[in-house]
Length: 464
Image 1 (cartoon, helix red, strand yellow):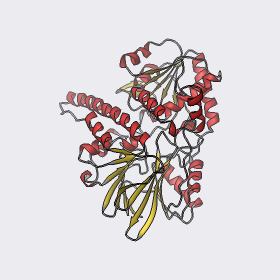
Image 2 (cartoon, one colour):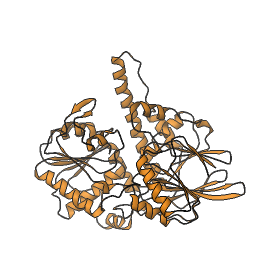
Image 3 (cartoon, rainbow, N blue to C red):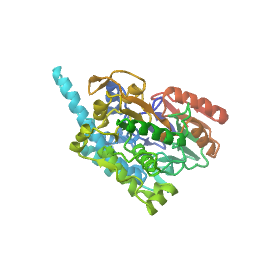
Image 4 (spheres, rainbow, N blue to C red):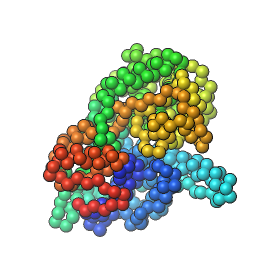
């Protein structure tokens, strides 16, 4: 078996891995690459393989850096099945529709800029129709249900505890007389999640492909994060400021809403207006409510016996642009949660534009921001920052709480790997910036001295 590492190698975006086994070609993930505009356009538009020769696609979860280029794949001629969990299918359906709108808007913006220079317009990466076509090719099945997807290859999904429906991908492979188990971790959750179940240990793994987003460092404790979030939000509210929270629509938004709900119920926050301003976040929260089978016992019990964990009287979900624009007129304290988490797209950029220059306000990041994104620039202290092509002074307080991350940190990843059983012969470390991957590779060499540990380069091919 050979694997081509075509994305999320020594970086965190554009997950994509091509598996060749038994004269079959299986694509594992098909994510959008995000970074410098020119490189992103080139890598996202042009696949380094013939899409019509693929036999199957397997998807671990619905984040755009894992599924966001599927419409382009189908647009270019892929017509077969895309395998995932039921919850991933439902979340990806709304994610890809939203992504298509972003592709259209971005193409229109770039085309206007090019027109000023007398250059021809550009086409969007894909359309809403392409997204719909891709979703129709999804085949969903539950955790722990083996599914043959190609000759000699059976997929089983195990709970990854990362976002709703997120899975570890277990590939049981028979290659001639040889049988082995290849485990792709997907994105691994931290465990002890407010909403989701813990990652499920996998048995009898022969080969491991593991993420390392935070492979070189540890998060702060979750209990401290909730207290710190309450303190930061409360002090901003007390000075009549607004708290702008860039948050990924899937996973992070629901977790922050749940946390604010619990803090309010406990009397640790006053019931100020809270707005979730993102049509995608609204739709994703509705999908969350449709899949209580993914919840941990405490949230399932809260939903069954008390109330909607993602709703309260002072919370408003916003879909319409007109309602979103009215938030610019707010004079009193408020909390605005808006996508995207890295501040690269969506309505949050408008809220940053309108609020980042006022020192009574706060911009609170609750997740990872990849290099070169607007969120990373703000966190790095760049001042001013460009928003919609214009410089804006950063006078608002800027804070970050990484304990809300949906990714396991170094210690939690060690626990995850140690919980696996089997004689793991080779481990490839992916989905992390180079420093994080290299650091976690060293950790793995210490805790798994009999395993060969590699950190693949972009387009590197490994045999297993």
